[in-house]
Image 1 (cartoon, one colour):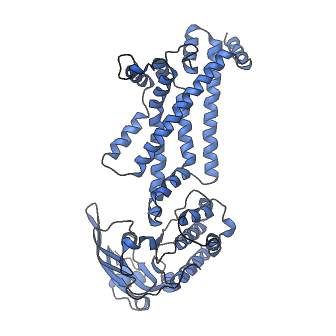
Image 2 (cartoon, rainbow over the protein chains, first blue to last red):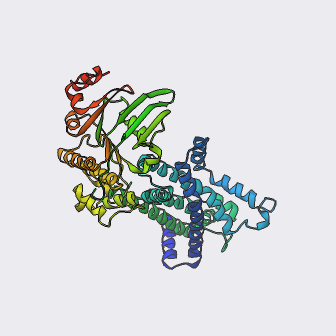
Image 3 (cartoon, each protein chain N blue to C red):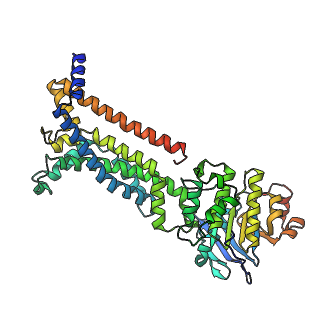
Length: 233
Length: 241
């Protein structure tokens, strides 16, 4: 049975099954959109936290690190409460739309990107602080230099965020509703098809998801290796 | 270096008055007072943990003294910060090529087009200009750090054990560059434990012990007839506690 499902899954992929690729397309679209907003929020948050001193900084760092482990279903529930008809943003009618799924993923992965950015920038800032001060490097030149010199580590952080977003199921199924042709993404489709006993499409999507995860990890490894080769880490 | 012009030194080149540094309730530098009236190299010597690096960091503004005043050429250290540069014991280089490191340090400064190449040539690194700086050897990294500091055309140069654990060739290149810079009027403060090096470079010597200056005398006097018990013991290779 498993072998049959596997061969059906392969044929679904190779034949370019429209349903399967619609789900794949929406998954990538939602996760890339979430990644865009999370990078826009997470990089400045992490960098600012690393390069500034203020009372309560340690508490902020602890909170940020804790938020990295946010349970997706809790995030899904919170976003659901915000976007439901009786919630503060219910009037926008975003529940069960891809936008709601993007919002949930942004909440999930922004802390990851911000926390990893903080760690990278904090290390770099400790290393460069004295020499930048000695050379009288103005902030407008220092910030781009930090970002440029941390580029490989930051790319790794961004890829980690994407990996988390694309493989997440708990939050998007709550706020997206897993509606066919509207909010069905790979992870929610796998959960649904498995519960229906339709293993072929579940396996096909699983194989693509696995391939994506392997690709992302391979990219991380390649980026790290390239950086290490040039002593840029 | 060729950009530098000879600078006349009339009054004090450096004047440190009642400088005290207290961190976390512990006083690490006690009432430091000294004046240097010449360019050339003031060697800062003393046992490990005496406070030599802290003193240079305070003078350069990397640490804010708890009390006291630092002046260079009759002006507050804060107003002359852009005329100072520092080379640290461990070269801190950006994650880019050797050439890009120099370019970064000199952005916004009015330098001749070939200044970067000249600087790289002076430190014998022109052939490694496009190599990642952090892949250079320890000696090469330190030479690059010195080239970077000199490219900013400082009037005051702080050197915190820049030749510690370097090969003789690199030490020779660095010493040659420092002599060249001081000849052009750059005031240099140099921390070293190498007595031979101190004899080669020093105009005068400040001896620091337990956060206090126990002796400040010209180099000849210091090495032939040290006035303080601690400096005598240090030069004799005895344990200075």
